[in-house]
Image 1: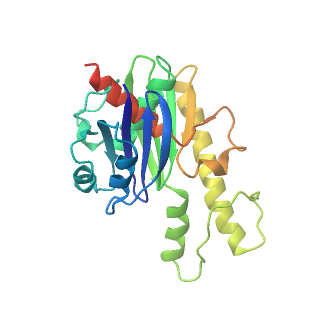
Image 2: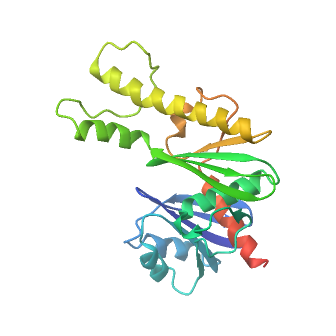
Image 3: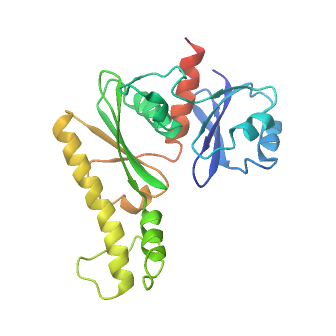
Length: 243
């Protein structure tokens, strides 16, 4: 496949990864409105193809900075290595499609649950026969903290921490931290148990920027590397090249 560019634009950050075949050569964040992409491409003149996944806009800006590169903009119309089990596939975010492609790449012909903990928390299933079933979406950690602060008069704005949380709290801050962090943990545990009762031999990937807060708290989960989404994007690009 050679050297390719993968771009993931989320609600809070724009990120890239450069692949040489199936190996990540370079990865980082960039400003989609600045010259970062042009500088990156000048360092990798061998890049001829790429793919963009975006839920945060800036697609046209990125395309204009990619010049003559052959770019795929990921959507439900893109050729995918799985089948979507919805009548209206246009409602599925590109980030969820990329995550399912990565699940198909790392765990082919397996039942896989991907939990993405970012601005929102998403739950998605890829079955062993290649069908994608979108699952629930709930507020992410920082959205929960921000919501309680902005929609009350007295509650302070707190941030996620790795400190141990308790059901009996001594301060308002401890109450807020325990409510959010334990609430997210218990939510995920219940969803994992519920999905495991439906799908046999379920593999669970925990991805997203906030998965670090649950590394020692959730059992039987695969804490995916930061390039998980990029592997899915590269896999989709490879899949389209071979169609």
